[in-house]
Amino acid sequence: MEKRKRVLPDWIKKDFNHNRTVLNLKKDLTTNSLHTVCEEARCPNLSECFKKRTTTFMILGTNCTRNCSFCSVNHGAPSVIDKDEPAKIANMVKDLNLKHVVITSVTRDDLLDGGAQHFVDVINSIREKNSSTIEVLTPDFKGVSSSRALVSSAKPDIYNHNIETVKELYPSVRFGASYEGSLNFLNSIKDDDPSIITKTGIMVGLGETEDQLKYMLEDVVNSRVDIFTCGQYLRPTKNNAKVIEYKDEEWFEKFKIMAESFGIKYVYSSPFMRSSYNAGDVLEEIARSRSN
Image (cartoon, rainbow, N blue to C red; front, side):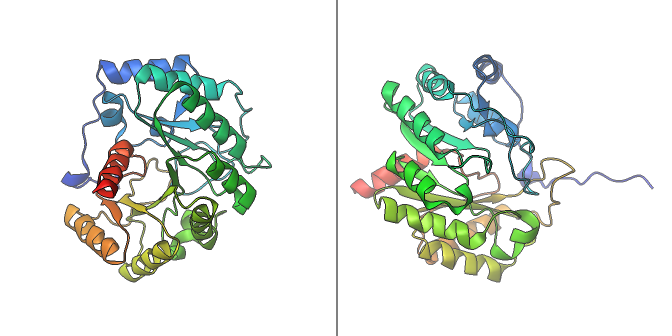
């Protein structure tokens, strides 16, 4: 019997057309041997963000030392670190005139510091040539507190570490990582530097229950997280975890209200929400609210 392709709900469909701006940005990134999580993780917002000439730089190569079932980033033997990468990114940030820069990476369990020093080098290089605000989205550094603290010492404006899903789904979705470890990671950033804005996020549609989400939100609040993002999980390839459920827009609105009721001040919840989506606008909103 012929297999029928699963049809996406209307609210999940999005324009993926690439105009000249998108193609030129792709070319510039390739020319400079730079990578983006937008491309590597097959983000549905790529075309929209690239048209605005915004992107999330992915450092430390394109091969991850872990293999989470939701993620389409390559896994395998890690790449040799490009020592020129910090300068290349700083120059690209200047060329694009970015007001807000997001830096993420593959997980590098092969490195003693997990790549923390490279994050710091990138932050410092950007600041030497630009006045941009900087957001980092880091892995858990295998729970090594000195690596987390090293990145905190560089004073990124936003420090993001995603918990990705509820505790109960970690064995099947995020094996190799620790739910409690990620919560402790987030909480400890505030110990490193209380002025750093912290951020985390999840994907839904992997089989989580409402009760599990409530327990997770309570844990996030106790970890002193400032910003929380929630978006629909979309299966990037047939080799990744299957979508169990597509949540509609009304569900995301209700989840936002629920998360805010738990005490999270800045909640961004929609089907296409991703941790770096409109990140600069989020920071501007926080700045306005704090000045009032």
